[in-house]
Length: 82
Image (cartoon, rainbow, N blue to C red; front, side, top):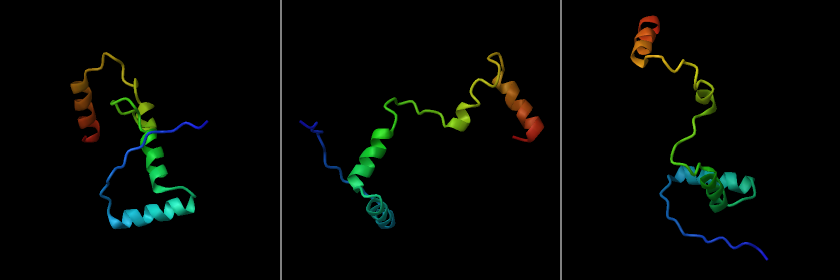
């Protein structure tokens, strides 16, 4: 016995070029636009907090916890003009 998933209809406004591109993609990959969008939306994090991109995540914790942020900003400004 299969698992029946409840579905809802959804109306989206998407520009015509993007729709054409999406239709070519789903045809080439043997899927449907509904399935593609469902898979994408299901892959989004459940938590409202966005996960940091891997590049940023690797930098987390680089500065010691006692670092004064304003002092560090002044340092960056004097060193790099940031």
